[in-house]
Length: 319
Ligand code: ES4
Ligand code: ZN
Image 1 (cartoon, protein in one colour):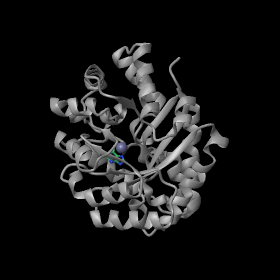
Image 2 (cartoon, helix red, strand yellow):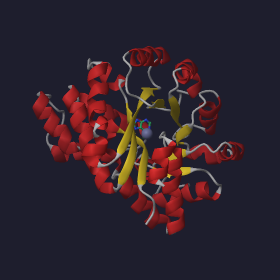
Image 3 (cartoon, helix red, strand yellow):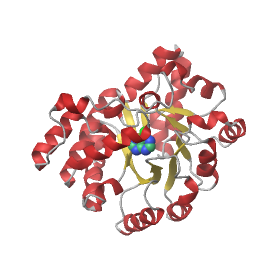
Image 4 (tube, protein in one colour):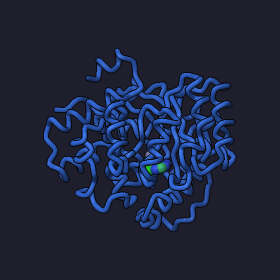
């Protein structure tokens, strides 16, 4: 048996399952542009990141109240617990909700309420990371972070996500400087669809302590050397990469090459309701595709424990 699972790359809105979309639409009297569940499910064939983001943002229309965010988060925690997850760091995209008129507090407090009791309810510790949308103005992210700090939001860090190409990390230096100044941990999506240059910017200009995805780093040997030397973990999401056509098939995924190069790789689920599975499904898929040894699986699980934003005492419990 490998060590307990730790999830480090999970968008809470990406756990919104089709059935819950219909339940929340009924509760909130939101009219969905889908005839029925089958019609909605027929739209999950993505061609790239943007084609996924379009559906991901559209489906958020059913998330309106603090209770909706709590219910969504509890449903994820229940599923994660069943998968054997003992610690989860969860991304939330508040701008995707505030732009629709949902109050920032409803979003943050709703998710936070579920996380506060994750240990007693589901047997897993948790932390919240606010991710900013890189395809919206950096000034909007800066103002929101200022607001989050003022309301003493229970967040451990910030991240950067959404449409990558054309939205380089360099645009967000002021936002990440502010986060560092407030003692927040910093991560960023980079090298998913974007070039290695964006990973360089994330680590050197935003000074992130983990890179989300980062699989295109392999195209730049000097970057790989840097990530190895500085022990910067990459939160890799294999099923996501297949479904968003970042790789052709799982067999083509660079995971084995990444391990071979000595990168600190972790396995995560990204948007499991959209990409065909949760963290356990990702582990099963890569184990089958690459005939990974028990040793390699243990390394992947242990890497996540070391990469987590937790106390040394909690780390010792998990190891
Ligand atoms: C995302 Cl897979 C992925 N990439 C970038 N941004 C995202 N937001 C939610 N899922
Ligand atoms: Zn992601």
